[in-house]
Length: 200
Image (cartoon, rainbow, N blue to C red):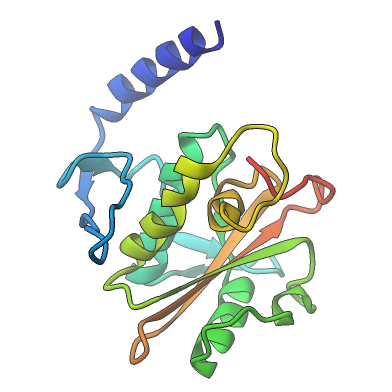
């Protein structure tokens, strides 16, 4: 019976979103293996509702403009989070600076530096290598949804997906090493739900 409210909510959201400007996101076709995508090729995506604004917050509460890649990451994350009733993320320049620092190292391995101050807090980190855009890296992380089962805790096979839709996350920051095509996104809890486990 839980499906009916979701269908009604989805229909209402789709009707409201149809009235807003649209953004075309590129479709990532994968690299020779089967690839899951929740939407068909070249689908139009509404972006106005998912970019809560074109500014980001900092740990000190100041606002700054964010670049096009940051907007692409924020749009993609909030689009997927909406599908799982997770609150929208705010782009945080402090978290982004720590992600960029790690991306600049050019190493495709997780770091523990994202848990250090001033961006401390429960955090997650996703890495992607070889993608052409922020949207394709994010889409690849989300593709793990096909292996996810409700109520399960952390699993290595769905860790990227659960980090993206973690309901306790409030801040997002991402970095890109253009030469190596290395993408790093970090997620930090909002301080009021720090005990929330990393699961949808």
